[in-house]
Each structure stands twice: as C-alpha cells, then as structure tokens.
Length: 417
Image (cartoon, rainbow, N blue to C red; front, side):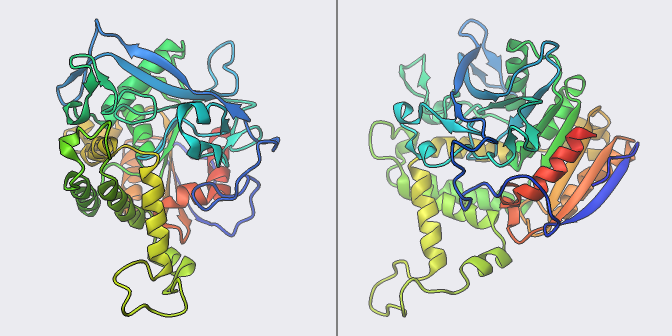
C-alpha cells in the first residue's frame, strides 16, 4: 500500500504477498507462548471511575447514568510529551484485553483468558504492527459490556440490584465520549491513531468525527458508515433468541440460571455472519462428524459445521452476558456516521481532520467492500487524506482478525508514513 496522496490511494491486496508480522489471531489461531519476545507479556486491567455519582453522563439517546467505571489495559510507555498514544477499539464481544496474558484471569473468574492471549496479540507488541516499543497502546472496554466497565450486570445504586433491562440504551457515540474522558484522565490531548475492526472500526470513525482535533490517524477495518438492513435483521433474530429464552426472566436472571440457550443461539447465528461461504466450505464442507448419518438418532449434531457452531455457542455463554449482548448489538444497529451531515455521508466527512485508512475484505458480507469504498470516496470528495485497501480473503468478516500478516503490514505502513 502506498502512502496516501492529498486525497486518495487505493489498493487491492492479495494475502499471498509475503509479510513479516506474526501468524493469525482469533479462535483458530495457534497459542503464542508467553515467553515469545514479541509479546507484551503479563498484563493487568485497570479500572477508573470516569463519571461520578455527583455528575451523571447524559447519553446520546437521552438517558443519564452514574457512576460509570471503565476497565482498560495499556501496553508500552507513554512519552514525556504524551504524543505516542494509540487507542485500540474492540468489536462486539471483545474486551480491553487486546494483547499479552492476563495475570489475574483466575482471580477474576475469566478462566478463558488463561488459555490464550489477548484478541489482537498478533498485531500489538514489541516489533509488531502496533509496536509497543514506539507506541503507548490503550484498549478500553465499552459501556454496557460485562468486562469491568459499567453495564447491565453492574449494581444499580438506586436499587442495590443489577440493572438488567433498566440499564439505559447506549450508542457508539456514548462509547467514544467515554474514550475522550479516559484520554483526559490520562492527560492525553491527541492520539497518534485510533484503530479498530468491525464495531471497533466504527468507534474509530466516530472518534475522528466527534473529536477531529484529537485524532491524527484513524484505521477502520471491516467496517463502514452503517450496518446494512441484512445486518440489522441478523441482529434482530439474535436478540429474539435471547428475549424468548424461558430463563431470560425479563433480564433479571442474575443469581440464577442465565438464558444460556438463547445467548448460544444468538452467538451461533452471528458467527455465521462472521464467516463466508468459501471459508465454511474449505473448513467443513459437508463432512459428517461420524461415519454415516444417524437416521433414528433424533436431530443432534451430525455435521462438522454443526459441531463447530455448537462449540462457539457454548463457549460464548461461559464468558458473556446476555443483557450485554442485547445492548451492544443494538448500539451496533443504531450507528450511522452520516448523522454528522444530516444524513449526507460526504457532508459528515467534512468534519474529519485525520488521515484515514479503510480496509475491506472481499468475502465480508456484513460490512461489504462496496460500502467501505463508499466511505472512502466520501472522504475523497471532501479532499481528505484517505487510503483504501480491499483484501482478498476467504475468511469473511473475521478476516480482520485472521489475516494478521496482511492487516499488520497495512497498519504498520499507514502508521509509519
């Protein structure tokens, strides 16, 4: 990828191109040992109260919330001038643990973290694309989640019980507002870059729109200005599965059996949208789990792809909260960058002062290349510095996690020039 001109640079990237960053990250990635010199090593989450009980935060949809705690992790060292910060934003089911190994996983009950490193270990670390020898990396957990930041499972000070569905609806804009408050608390006026994939990519775009003076570069991976109608539909079905689980109990299931079946079904459905037809064919085809079909064995798992989705659903239930899934997926639905231009995306892009890199993946139908290119062209029409890369990959929406060599090369090149 060449450096962007005063307006535009576009490349189509073949993943067969040799590159140096470490191998893939994500569910199918090999575990990278803690002893690897390129790892940030043991990490420890921090929690900060950004909104006090005395000064509530007014949310974008009109609600008010107090207090608000935010969990975040940092890697690398903040420079004396505080000018080397990179903010990394996570996707729907992610968290602040983007790199390294959580040394407190057992004490916090997040045992799944002990089995593999942070979700972007292949990209963040010494000598990697986001080089922690050079950058101070910050990854905050979003409002409404279940990983340390205030969310539906947090205690409502008005009742002494978990919020449940009484938690106010949140938006990507609310998350970015809190990102700004976190930067204020750390004494950072401007970030060298904000980088994210999927819902994290939309946070990167929103940050560049909401705080144009505070963002030097924005990297938007596998995301665009808004979710399509088809994406809205899949999210709606996922929430339907949760809301109609007999154990959902109107969202007040804490302290008893959670709506595991509904949440697992929602995750299974969502996981299909993260993959591609080609990728699923390569990995599973029509392979059976056993030697032959079981004609009188009911409707249990018989195909390899069924087994895979079942595993994804069951493992997700162990680490995520159903209410958080409802609130975060709805925030994903609501996001539309064009609101900054009264419905005109090009007008909205006039606000942006950052250099922007947009990366799409040709098999991603959740945030397809055409819509990503539309965002890039909107930036170009306003004379912004924009680079656009379309990556060829069979891994669908999850390509931003799996194609770490290619993504790492693109990100490193963009940050370096």
